[in-house]
Amino acid sequence: MTQIFAHRGYSAAYAENTMSSFVAAEKAGADGIEFDTQLTKDGVVVVIHDEKVDRTTTGSGFVKDYSFKEIRKLNANKKGIKKEPIPSLEEVLEWLKTNKLICNIEFKNGLIPYEGMEEKVVELVRKYDVADRIIISSFNHYSIVYNYQLAPEIETAPLFIEGIYMPWIYAQSIRAKAIHPKHSAVSDHIIRMTIENGIEVRPYTVNRGQDMRRLFNVQCSAIITDDPVKALRIRKEYEKRP
Ligand code: G3P
Ligand code: CA
Image (cartoon, rainbow, N blue to C red; front, side):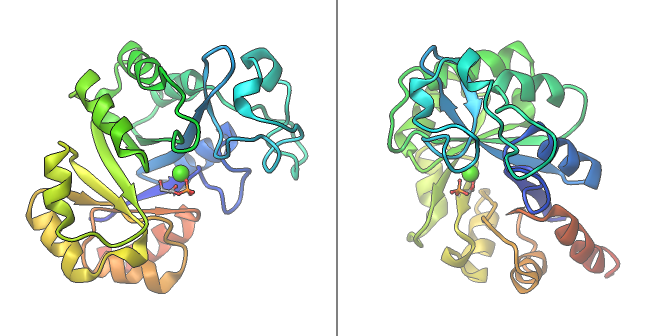
């Protein structure tokens, strides 16, 4: 059965990358969550998509220029009523211990290299003993290979926007167990071939019903979507089939 990962949590209905959006995804029945990580000035791994806090919070400037104490004062739910802080990765992993969700941590270290982020993430994953439910992905493939070298017990998956030739060969060559392509970058044939060759396929960001149906039909490993409730409803149609 195709798994459903909530992209930045249940971000179609809650502020992205907040504890509320993760908790709502879990309550809705998603199989997993996806979120993005950056590093503060004092080296704390925090959960936020952009290098700058401007779009999603009440603050302005780069994440890397805030201490954790300072960044926690910002409101990551600026369109909502209830104030919510930017979560730390540690906070998310602590909560993850209370449920069975799969957790896809995307390293946002393509523009800013965030030296030491891999080590810090590995340390936290080991501290909370959740390696079997973690997938590390990134557009920075050097970083996920480095993460694999540090912690081969943690699954890695390269993200890509464009179609690449025989992606399973590439995934195998960097010891990744999966690929996370943009959904329009993989045909049904490529999805089937990749899975047949032992590599999972989890396309992003799948929000339209017709795209969800295509991927459920082809028995894709997982989809990453802003709307896990819609995806769960559509997936039910496929569960009823013999
Ligand atoms: O992990 C898949 C997807 O989240 C990658 O793109 O920009 O939404 O982080 P973006
Ligand atoms: Ca992401």
